[in-house]
Amino acid sequence: MDRPADLAQLNAAVRDAVATAPVSDIHTHLFYPSHGGLLLWGVDELLTYHYLAAELFTVAPRDLTPERFRVLPRSDRADLVWKHLFLDRPPLSEACRGVVTTLNALGLDVAGRSLAPIRKWFADQNAETFLPKAFQIAKVDYAVMTNNPFSLEEAAFWKQNLGACELLKPALRVDALLTNWPAAAKAMTATGYPAGVAADAAGLESARKFLADWAGILKPVYLAASLGPDWAYPAGAGTKVLDEAIVPTARAFGLPLALMIGARRGVNPALGEAGDGVGTADVNALANLCRRHADVKFIATVLARGNQHELCVVARKFANLHVEGCWWFCNNPSIIEETTRMRLEMLGTAFTAQHSDARVADQVIYKWSHTRAVLADVLARAFGDLFTAGWRPDVEDIRRAARSLLGGAFEEFCRK
Ligand code: HDL
Ligand code: ZN
Image 1 (cartoon, rainbow, N blue to C red):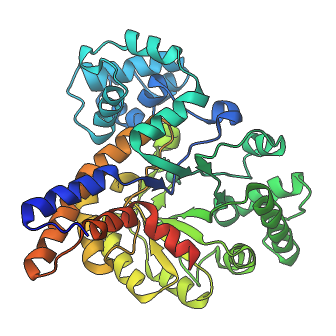
Image 2: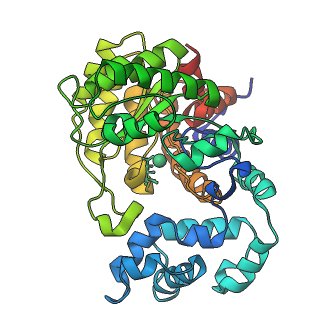
């Protein structure tokens, strides 16, 4: 068995392992190419990503308001982002650098700073071939989608039973049941699952049937919901729906429930989907949930940097909890490094280092390239410390560790 003889060989082995390990991307907003415009891809979608829209308004002239921006054709919006965030100032933010990384990895002349030839190249692509191309560059073996049965548009695509794509796996997203029961009840009632404005016994029975039927349609990898920083359990508002509809569905289908905690929705409604913020959550609510439903598996990530340490500690207390990803405002190299070091120190390799949260297919290229660069440094340091302590890892040990952090631990958790 290959065994690095010194720190230099060890360092090289770790970097090679991280660079070559296939990634299973366990949270994205990608869609089957057969689901039409739901799948976003291409340079104009990249440039009008809501992270960049938010950054645009931090520097744009006052008369470029979100209201005016929103109604422009997408290419005009992309031109404005390109001008203000790439030409008028260096694209140093993570989301801007991501566009540069992505276009460069696709072999396009991003240094030339002209969108015209880049748009021309994309015009010759199509979703069916571009998606696998992006996954191949990023070394992603599959990605988990976010599938919302409460979205009439998305539900209609699923009802047509269109072509699937083996690169993508469904996830059943249930936020509406927890954060907007009246809207969820309306959508369920409209599709044959009668539910009133209160989550009463009849409504919860409908919710269980709705979830069971959609679990049958989607065959999801997990159920998922994002929760605000004020989520409380068992004292909170969504407890009845969790305990009597969502968790029973997870249990019945043997599926994990993935919770993403800390998104403060609509901090600035004028920005639309770019208008959400972050808040420090009560991670003890998650501990209460894991304790009360010890036979159900939970996957969790938090949005506030300040919650990451507590989440690690809770994950050490509950075998039915798996920690994953540096979500959204934590998906920045400085926080990925700090968070991943802390998780390694407290959880070993029993966590998932990252998810891309990609909304645009092209983004898997930069989100994974940037994460691998940070993970290589963090893992090289951790293995170096282990070597110095006296352990002699094999190359296979190192490869197994890298894969564990990039999807292996998640798959092991789902199997156990
Ligand atoms: O709720 C979520 O899944 C979040 O990831 C939101 O989609 C958010 O807008 C986002 O795209 N974050 O990266
Ligand atoms: Zn997301």
